[in-house]
Length: 227
Image (cartoon, rainbow, N blue to C red; front, top):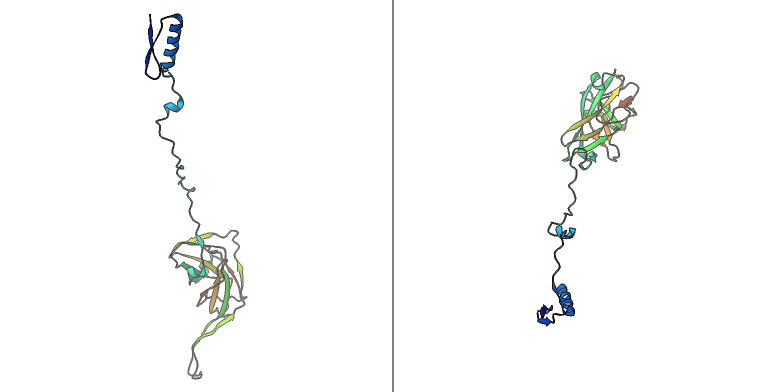
């Protein structure tokens, strides 16, 4: 009896029904029969339809203390306007003597920071000369002197670590000048040049603080400190 076999090309042909024929038929059938699907597909086949993992970086931690905030720049002379605040014994934190407060206002459009002590140079004479009928016709009323360095000795307060002041636009901070006494025979200065840490141009305040130390000695607090 003959058995029919098929080749890969789709052409059917007969093989004699002998032992050799049956073996040939079996070999042909095994070669042309597709393999049964695997019971356990490969892992790559199982995940082939899954979306590829995102390469986008994880969002940054925005909790308090971890967000990056640009540091405020250092205040410059151009940013600030100076004025005299209170002058009284009570300004200096209860110390005996007299104290004058110097107020600094941020007139710029952005926040800046101050830290440390101001540098101070006093000049001129705050005493006003008022002309009378006894003076010559060309007499001019006004300060006795608007220039000339006053030999005041300024020392820093004992604060170990000066505070850092963040000064928003329109906001103010201050520092305090203190003297142990006041002498009627010592004239207050006409003005004072205030130098900021790291700055080259002074901030001029006229009229200057109304202080007249007997021994010419003053001490100054750090920015943002009253004593």
